[in-house]
Length: 498
Image (cartoon, rainbow, N blue to C red):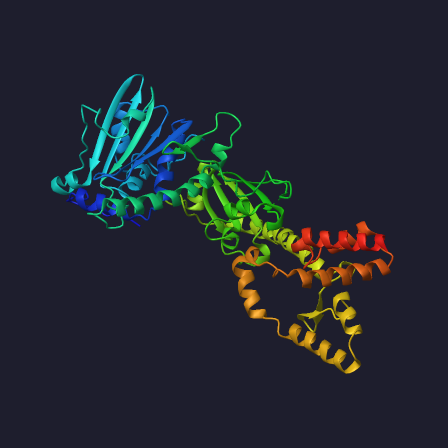
């Protein structure tokens, strides 16, 4: 297209008041906003980040203080400028920034007054963006206060580092203005929800073996949350794969989490988070070891109960931002075509690992050597479950009945099996399978089941340890094992006394 010559030009400088208000609505949440500020701390070489808040007062604030390299006044003014860095410019490896907007857009999304105080080589400087002042003047001007002693949170600054202070928290207060206590409850609840996000997003920095990053919230240390549970011996870790691309190398590693019975309830719920494991499966995309996006299959697969133990770590360098379309908030990305095909093959392999973990446990239900209460029957592409009419509890009781009652008894058991609430079970399993547990038996019912089963296995010439091993693997004995073992001991003592 030929270049069009122009004889005139016009000033199209954006109105400060309008554009700076627009920066507030990029889409940050509190957790992504605080994470973006901490990104700057990591880039500045910080090893400690303190989040300090005061919420139960007339002028609540949130302060993020680090011990990084700090800034001179010229550097601070540049950092306060919207679009301070070109997203196309190359960055050093530890630089977690991209657009030069994070400090401003993240802060404005939560507050109307942003103050930054920085200290380097014994010299302290400060700068302030106040959106009310910008609205009044319609000018791109920041304030450079001469005195900083009365700035909240400044006492937490060390010999070097930076304080980011949020005041006029209009976006955090939930619209509450005249009720300080209610406003504090709302802000504190949102801060509590933010903690898990930070534990997850920066877990690899906090787990570093050398000079690990420490993050605290009002003096309380935050522990890292490894989404792959690598310290659990039952976690399956596949070998790491390297995909070389023009803009850098993509590292891919697949993990299959342990079954929920192989870890404590607290650990399991911590891994799953508020939305549970079903929503936490999928790819975990890291940019410079910082978690960008997680809990998605990028449209390559569906989330399912059988694959909820599958998680895949993807590491990309900051040179691939354009290829992955990393957004300003660093909380979303798109899958490049060259990576899509490789990940499609990865999905096929890792899904099988997650399914095997559940199928191994499910197989115990129908293993003929493990006294199944139910039979799994597959016929013409359909799967059904039927009570095992040969189970010793049923057969022993049936043997005591007259012939006509025996037939009616087995009809009742068959009717129970045919009435299995498939739809309800499916809904519950899809939502929170780990919350489903066998119903507890009363003492009399459990004792009858234990005596019938134990007697049958003894008559089959199995020793006591083998019998215990078989019974411990199936319900109702597995879920009430201490009582089951006590009843077995009583049976053995009775036999010895005879």
